[in-house]
Amino acid sequence: MKLRSSLRCLLAASTLLAAAPAMADETYSFGLWGDMPYAKADDAPAIPALIDDMNASDIAFSLYDGDIKDGSSECTDDVYTSTMDMFNSLKKPVVYVVGDNEWTDCHRVNNGGYDNLERLDHIRKTMFATPETFGAEKMTVEHQGAPGEKFAENTRFSKAGAMFVGLNVPGSNNNKVTDDAACTKKSARTPEQCAADNAEYAERDAANIEWMKASFAKAKDAGDKGIMFVVQGDLGFDIPETEDDDESRLAGFDGYAAFLDALTAETEAFDGQVVLVHGDTHYFKMDKPLPNATHMLANFTRVQTFGSPNVHWIKVTVDASSREVFTFRPQIVAANAAKSLK
Image 1 (cartoon, one colour):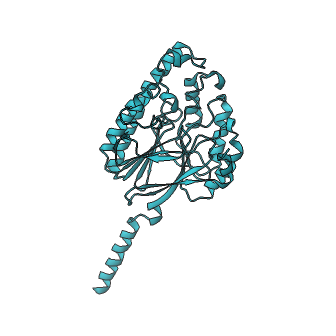
Image 2 (tube, one colour):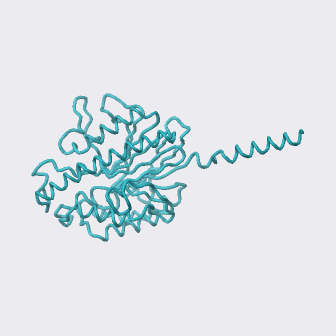
Image 3 (cartoon, helix red, strand yellow):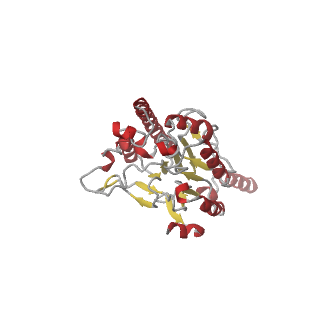
């Protein structure tokens, strides 16, 4: 009887051990980077050192928050091809989030005067043609749209108590055209194309908010302790903070208003930590800017990534059992440090 009892205890213990997640899966790291390489800053020679530094680390994946080129160079097809090659030189999966320089701004004369909506369609068909990420080691993620189709660029995946969401919320006011002057400034656009841009903005903004809300709901159902949203555009956070003005509602940033309202409301109703990562302004920064300079939403953090000419990255450690869930450490690539001083 004692032997049977001991065997039952051993079996029960082994079952519990098998069911428990491995400790290695509980805490892990990943990388954040974007806004590079820019031809006008001669970033290309700095990229190999960046890739080597990330490949030598223990990150499980990386998230690239847009702007695969600078805003003054042409949106030729080879730009997207060379970017995919860069992403695939990473050992670990790379999740790509779309920026404004590769589609929103392609209507500019110095960008080649493209139809920017055609460039967005091209990105969807070439860079989101499958459910898999980039990188030598790939990862299948959830997409809002079918591969190659509308909203395929909006992604989502979870790992060990944290959810990650990529959204097409780019700079240049989220592709919203505020007036006739903005339509034609340094641009090859026609009034009809600007009207099409505003229709595109309205539809995508609604889809982004829908995907955001659904992601919060899914994270709650899964018991996730943290959720990170990654976009490219600076939503107006870096206009000098003032007590009386809400900069996100000023002309040139009003294209983000509905998104920010929804994000604020969802964050207030979420028990865990919420992080919004973006590029666009190119300086590493971490703060708590919502809802405004004098009121802090305690569980919301904004992180702004490095960008050209600062060819560096951020290492993020995730521990869902910790109070902050996400911790951030800037990774200065030694070979590129001198470049940042120029």
